Length: 150
Image 1 (cartoon, rainbow, N blue to C red):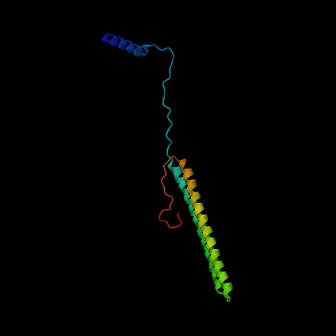
Image 2 (image 1 turned 90 degrees about the horizontal axis):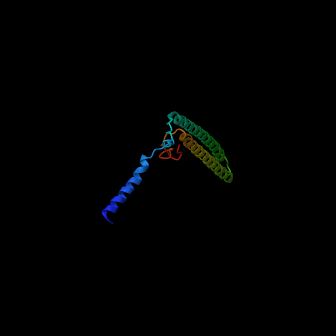
Image 3 (image 1 turned 135 degrees about the vertical axis):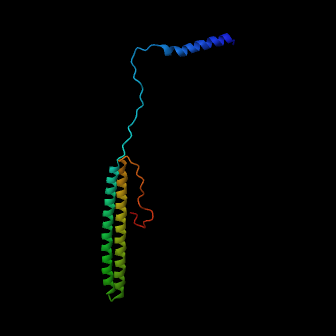
């Protein structure tokens, strides 16, 4: 191809690209706008309320736990006292085994109830705090608190 053909082709191409820019529009157009979602407002008082509810539930669960443990210990004390008062060894051993077995059952039930209530309190907190639009980064006490994990 020679220079004239190249030059002619380039001029035609430039005209085709530039002509629509000079065209007059008769219709109305609306400018394109970016759809923006407003950023949610952080509600710290909402988190305070969620924390108050969570901590209240944990306190209540722990109070119930200590009441149940105290009752289990009282029953165990009485059962052991009565068992050691028995003169027949077979009856005494059966009563001692029953006292300890009943205590273990009551103890397990109390711990299970506490763990369930604690888990429920944290689960409710996580759900309710999401509505507050605040990133909440609290651990739920499983680290270094012993077996209770409050």
